[in-house]
Every structure is written in C-alpha cells, then in structure tokens.
Length: 516
Image 1 (spheres, one colour):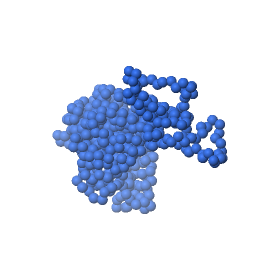
Image 2 (cartoon, one colour):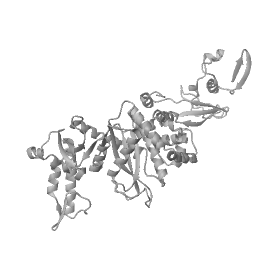
Image 3 (cartoon, rainbow, N blue to C red):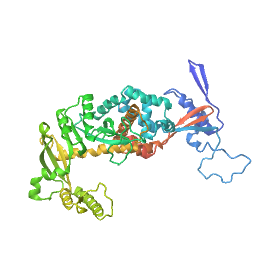
Image 4 (tube, rainbow, N blue to C red):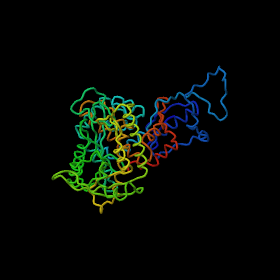
C-alpha cells in the first residue's frame, strides 16, 4: 500500500504505508492511508477489490494467534463468528480521550484557560477523575491517555498558583460564569473544617472546634457560592478561628474584587452575631441568617398567649427583635415558619435525647454533653421543664433579615434560606468526590495552592452536573469506560474511535456545544 503525490502529472512523492497479506491487514492499511489524505481528497477505485472491500469490523479478535497448521482445531468456530487471524497488529495503548475532552472543554468554557497553565489544568481535571496526591496525579493522567507533565512540573505549577494569584483569576471567571444570565441576587456562605494527618500545630494548622469531634490540627475553609451551589470564593483561616469571624473577610474580599453591591447574603445561624449583621448592613448589603430557636418564645409571645403551640402547616409568622447593645443595638425583622414534617423530626430527636437523659439520671450512661439533664443537690435527673419548652417549639424555624417586607415577604425569605442546602452539597462534593481532605501539605503557600486546585475542580464538577443532571461521579464513571484504542501495524499507528453507549451519549447530548 502506497500513497502517491502527483503535481501536474508528475510523481513528486511516494510514501510506503505497508504490505497486506489478508483482508484484515488491508482494511487496517486502508484506514491508515485514509488518515493521511488531505481533507476532501478522493481515492482511486480498485476494480474487483472494491466490489467487496475489507472492513475494520472484520478484524475482530485479530490480536489472537491463529492455530498452527499442523495442529487440529478442537472446536471449530460457530457460524457467523469471525475466525481469529494473525495480522501482526497490536493494541499499544487505550485512552479515555472522550472523558478528557469533556473535562478540558468544561475547564475552557468556564474561562479558566486564561491562566495559560497546562500543568495546573492537568491537576484540576485529574482531581475530578480521581482525587489523589499530587505525586499520584501522574498515574491518573497516564491512565486516561492525557498529556502527562512530570511531577516536578506539577509542583512548579503549584508554586505559580500562589505567585501569580490564580485564585483571583479563577474567582473572576467564576463570577462571570455565574452572572451570564443576569446579575446575582443571592449569595450563600458557610464554613467547614479540613483536618491534617499531623501531630503538631503551627501558625495555620491548629486544633479548634470540630463538628466531627476531632483533635487533629485543622483549618477553617469559608466557601461562597451562588444559589445553584456554583463556587464564587474560597478562603482559608486558622483552625481555631471562630466561625462568626470568617464571614466578614470573605464578604469584604468579594465586594472589593467585584465592586459588588445590592447583594443578599444567606448564612446559617452560626454566623448570627450583632457585629456581623451590622457590618454587612453598613457595607450596603442585605442578609438572611438563621435565628436561634431559643428566642422564639419571646419573639412569638403574642401567638403563644392566644393560640398556645397550635400552628398550621407552612404557617409563617413575623416579629421583631433588638440585637446588639448600646450604640450597636439595631432592631431586626424575624421570620418564623412552622412545618409539620419538621415537627415530627424534632419530636423524634427530643424523644431520643430524653431517653439518654433518663439513662444518665439512672446511672446507666455516663454524662457527656447530654441535653435535658438536670444536676442539683439531690443528684442527676431529667429537666422536664426544658423538655416541655423544647416540645413547644418543635416544628419552628427562625430567620433574621434586614430586608423590608415590601422587598421580600416572609415565604420568600424562608425559600431563600432553604437554598443553603446547595452550599452543603458543594462542601460534601469537595470533601468526598474531590477529597479535599486529608491534606498532606504543611506550608501555608502549598495549602492555599491545594485549595485553589480543589476550588477549580469544584467549579468544573458543578458546571458538568448542572449541565447534564447527573452526578460528577456518574459522569466520570460512564465516560471513563468509553475508551479509544491505538493500534500499531507495520510501524504505523492507527487510533480507533470507540462505540459510545446510550448512557454516555445521553450525557454528551446534554452538554453545550464545544467552544460555547
């Protein structure tokens, strides 16, 4: 098989593609020669050979050896099954190029190509595929057939990440993506902890309040997202930093970076402090923050006096409360909602806590941080007055806001707060699917760079999830199984595209066209 180039009737170049001895070999050589033709270039007819051309489909099992001629074949092949032949071709590698192309296209669509750093892009996309250590990232890239930088190149990219402030550029690109359909009205904030496999504290990694009751050094990570859970900002704080003191630095950075105004900040009750709320208001922003339910008897005193603890399912009530002292005191609007389903959950939790308190009182269980336990001169017992107050408030949830009712009524305030589940979803994705923890870096610059990689990977993952409606784990698993194969024949390599299963095609059909 030869390729011939002629110019004005004269042969100016001849390229030998290979020699074929079987129809299977000829099919492979035809495919190899076809890839070398210029776009739109035609081929000559081959006369009788073209009447029944060899097809690549006929090369099934071509890597298996044909039985030697002098040995009988024990089980002749069944009718319709291609007979194994030896054609001298081998599969030299396979690749998940379809998955890789989907990831780098999402990375580009988000505007992250502005960093012009292929090694950083490789780390981000590899973390989406299989979150692992930076040293093991080379293996992940090799398994999918992606361009594989060396380990030192990856570590140099981490250094550039801090030197060139990649997080600033990524945050701007994320906001541009989040506002492509219009300005943001709400932004959501929450904080979580990431622990370290380390014995000793340092200036950043400190033992602090842990919801998981861990005693390892940790850091506090504040995450700001849009109402869909798409990340906008990520910040790192010392491990013993109080949650309430993380909100203002993140909001100030967001405001200064984007010159943002007229935004509504939504956060849980952990951010509720008079200082935080006053500072948000003084910055020209509004807020919706979870209220501590212990204040409900005072805020809703009129309702309890008239109706007791009787509420309609979905009922919304409003009140007002002065928060802060002295010159910092300001009157705040408080919205409450009652849900029967929440009442049932609260009742189950109260019953479980009463059961534990009774076991503590009976000496059958050691005292820990158990609710409803009363300790006085007579010994340990159940505080039934506290139990009764808790049952009275079951089903209620409160929210504090500085938005006037004319701008957002009570049900709208409740609905906006309920969007916080999106940020909880993003945190779960960062911790599980992207394995942001445990962190094996120990220098602050490396930890910040690691969080920047996780931040970018979270943005890529949320974008793909929003576009396809499938979880990022399902997207990766489905597309990773669709693999191309590269075959070597007579010194030439041919890459064969894979068949795309219906499940993978459904994911691809839901993605925006490449380049848009």
